[in-house]
Length: 107
Image 1 (cartoon, rainbow, N blue to C red):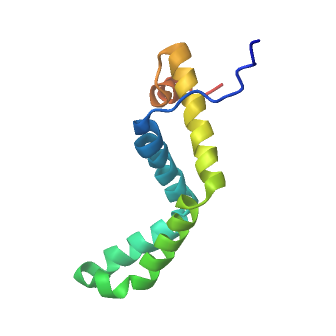
Image 2 (tube, one colour):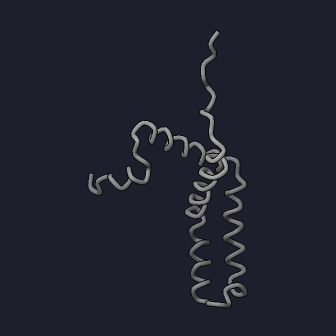
Image 3 (cartoon, helix red, strand yellow):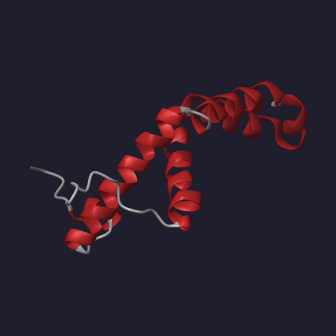
């Protein structure tokens, strides 16, 4: 008796340990962009003293990023996005970044 294939496709080690976490870091940086900007501004203004002067901004940035990295729902969201991109690549042969570049600017 055949059972319907409701399992997700198997993900390789590199996908689970490298590619999906990379996507999580990219998305988390976007979600924490105000903290990234504050830390960057502080570092530019502080020069060599940034280690001392930007502790608060650095801590806020780390807290924001860590909150996303440890969120199982965020991991699942990024995994599903990765799977969609992977399936689309298998279907078209065009990587996601290239596909975005080819879209016309005026539609």
